[in-house]
Image 1 (tube, rainbow, N blue to C red):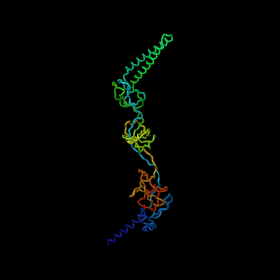
Image 2 (cartoon, one colour):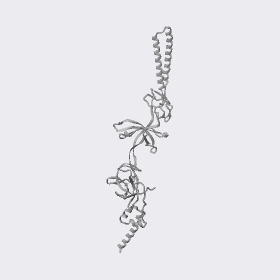
Image 3 (cartoon, one colour):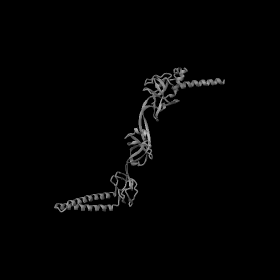
Image 4 (spheres, helix red, strand yellow):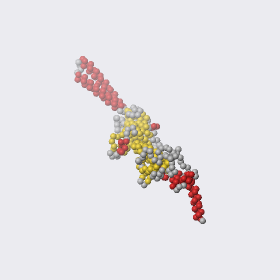
Length: 378
C-alpha cells in the first residue's frame, strides 16, 4: 500500500515537472524529442516552437532538436604588449654653478626656490682687488697709446727709428690684452645663471671663501622633465623616437602624464643587456620634481589575432577550445591563447571567415549537434 502511494506521488511530480521544464528550459527539448514527448507537448501548446529565422550563416530555421545558442562572428584585433619600467626624472636643462676664480662671497641676491632667467646674478665675490687690476691695466694701456702716438709724430720728422716704433706698438697690444684679461677676471667675480630655471639650495653663505671647485647652487629647468630608463634588449627594435609613453610618479599614483621618447642610445649595455632610453613629459602645475621615481608604461602593437569573448573559452584535457557554428552544426576548435583581458581573448586557431563563436549554450553542445543561433539580447 505504501509503495503504491509513492508511485502515485512520483507520477504526479513527473506529470508536472515535464511540461514545466519543456516550456521554460529549452535545453530539455532534445531529450524530450528522443523519448517522444516533445511532439505531444507542442501539440498541446505547452511548448512554443521558434519561428524560422533567416540571417547570417548559422541562423536558419530551428528544428525541434536544435540547441539554442548565442554566437558572434570572429573579429581580429592587434596584440597589445605593455611594458612597465622604473626610471628617474631630471630637468630638461640643469647646471651646477661655481665661480671661475677664488674669492670671498660678498652678496647672494637670490634665494632657493626663486625662478630666474638666463643672465640673472646669482652671487658676487669681493671684487676690490680685481677692480684695481682693471684700473691699472687701463692706465698702462693709455700710456702705451700716448707713446705710440708720440713716436708716430717723431717718425715723420725722422727723429724716431722704426725699431722704437715697433716696440711701442708691441707694448700697446700687450696692454690691450692685459686689460681684457683683467676685465674677464673682474667679470668672473659675478656668478650668472646660464639657463632659465629654479634656484636650488645655496650652500656657501656671504663671507665664505670659495674656489672654482666649490658648487654654489644648481639651476634646474623643470617645466619639462626628462625620464631616464632602460628597456630589455629584446624590445630594442620596437623603440623609436617620438613613440608615446605614459609616466606616473610613484608618489602621485593617480596622476599619469603622457610623454614621448626623445632619445635612444646607439648601443645595448653588455652588462645589463638593456637599452637606455629617454622620454620627455610636461610638468603642469610644477608638481613634479627632478629626481623623482616614475613608472613608465610603453605599449607595443603587434600582429593581429582572432578575438573571442572570454565566455567562449572552454578547457579540456588537451587544452583550450571554442565551439563554432558551421553550417548550423556545432564544431569544436582547439585554440592557443595569445593574450587575455577582461573584454576579449586573442587566440590562434583554424578559423574560417564565416565562423560564429558560441558564447552561451556551450554546455549543451556536442560535435555535430544541430544548433539554432538566437539573436543577442538587447
